[in-house]
Structures are given as C-alpha cells and as structure tokens.
Amino acid sequence: MMDTTSILEDAGFRFYEAMDGDEAKRVLATSWESIVLLFSDVDMPGDTNGFALARHVAERWPAIEIVIASGHVLPKAGEMPEKATFISKPFNKQMVHQHLRNMLPDNKLSEPLKKPV
Image 1 (cartoon, one colour):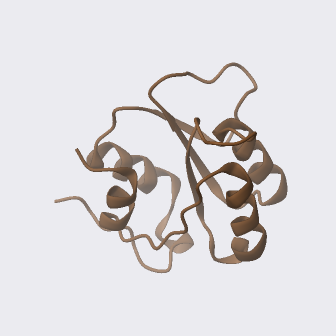
Image 2 (cartoon, one colour; image 1 turned 135 degrees about the vertical axis):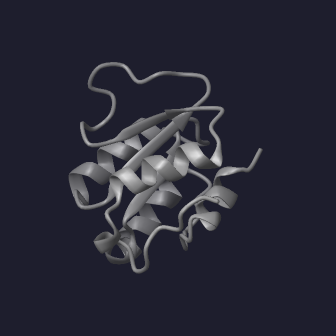
Image 3 (cartoon, one colour; image 1 turned 30 degrees about the vertical axis):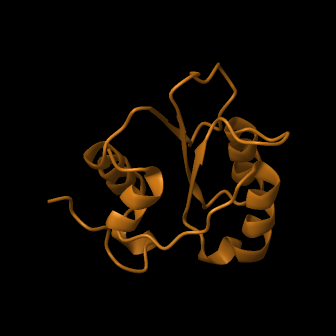
C-alpha cells in the first residue's frame, strides 16, 4: 500500500509536509497562493487536529480544497467545513486520485492531474 505522500507524488502534486497543525498553519500563511489542496490526517501531534486545521483553512483561504483522512474517527456534524471531503483509511491510490479529480478541475492545477494507469 502506498503512503499519502507517494499517492500525491504519483498524481503529479508538488507539496509541503508539516509535522503538526501549527507548522501547517505557518506553511499556509507564507505559501497559500501556491496551494490548491490541504490533505491532512485527523490525528496530528500538538493541539490542532485535522478537523480544526480544516476549519482554519476554510475560513482564511476558502479557495483551498480540503481532504481529511482518518482510520480511527468519523467527523461529527459541524466538525468539518462543508466543502471538505473526508476519506476513511485505508485508502488506495485510485480512490484518492478519483477524489482529487472530482475536487480539482484542471484549471486549478498548474498541470492536469495524471490519470491512474
């Protein structure tokens, strides 16, 4: 099974990695203009979980699409922004690529999302 970074690389994405929610917020604050997608796990070290990070991003940068993943919890009503997509783990490359194609029209990307083989 591929990890998330490998799946995103395979789809043609260049990305930033953050080890916790606070680092993700710092990266977003300095680089938001080049970011089209937040892909985050619910569980992260520190005080900010993936749901809180998703709400923060939706409020500050509404043009950024959001995918939240977890193999342990499901979102409760109101916990995620309406526009966010939740993916249950385990997931595979084809599932993630299909979600991304549905969320991100080619005109939002610097180059079209690669089609899975």
